[in-house]
Length: 252
Image 1 (tube, rainbow, N blue to C red):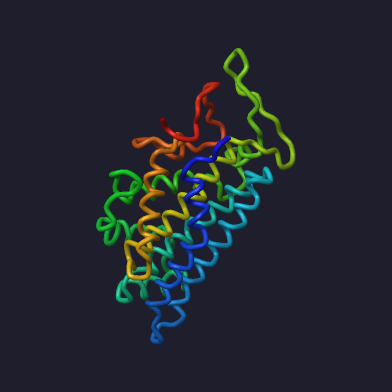
Image 2: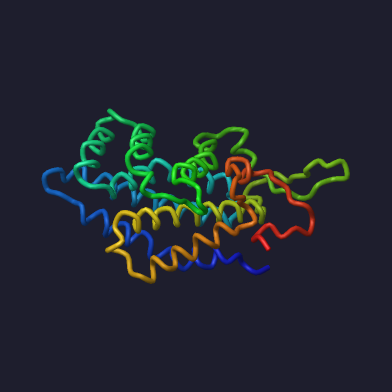
């Protein structure tokens, strides 16, 4: 089976996105608030390591572990976004987060009010707040072990004549559709980090990087697993079935 176009492009960009983001963050470092400046860098490293570990767990059939690690990227992504803003905006908030005075949710509300309107579109023409909201809904249920997380441990077999889904449960049960959904989420997180870097520090990004990121945006938007007006929290659930013979990898 041929890999989706977004998979091929995303795989090629893995080695480019985090160095570009790190260079952008380090360009904003200041000795006056050196500790606060390190917070978004640490968040970027945590995000990169979590994504890498998730990418290793997924093809091994450890889908519940892979999706849990992706959930762990969400708050780190918020701090990277904040870290890419001007020092007069980011430093006080980074310090407040570090002192447990503000949460990642508080910071996201600030970003949504003050920053995200200038980001404009996400994958399609939707506002950035809708893109991030979709990503959060797709990952939010998997912070702790739950019935929703348990669903990722079960390999879907087929639908029976009564329309019931038949599943197989065991250690590291590989499911190609679940694996592809998680890989799509890997690529969405990777694209989001790259896009945030371009939006806030395009001078640190080669022209080829910007162009490839735009190509990846179009490819992700054309995935058969996502719909323009859809809710990723529903579309990327562990048990969403497609009719036999339907190509769920990409839209025609």
